Length: 116
Image 1 (cartoon, rainbow, N blue to C red):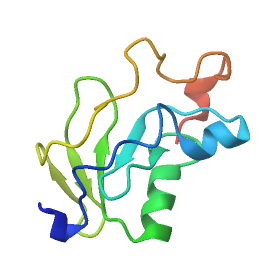
Image 2: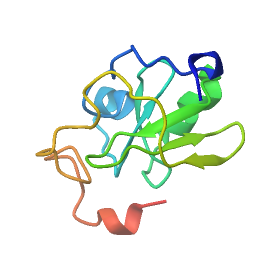
Image 3: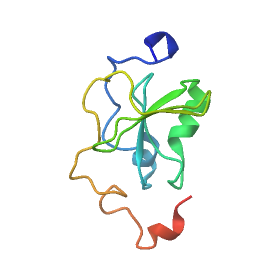
Image 4: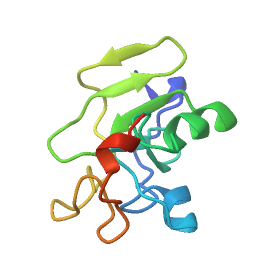
């Protein structure tokens, strides 16, 4: 995987939470980072699936986990998992004290029943 494949290792993440969920007051399960532009979106197990929606609308095929201790990549174009890839600009995950699911104060009590 190289920058010619749509990965920009120099672009920082867009924030510490899902961009769209933050804007609408929603919550997420796990976070994913677009390796092309740094957009942080929620995973496909989250109610809103913003990371996949971003990949479809932007044409950016690669995401990386934005969870502490995880550095795998996913290629939406080929449905391929890569255990490692290029080192992206920091930070490499949301803050360790940010709860999962998150963010604090917006996760419903029945969150497990709502996961995709």
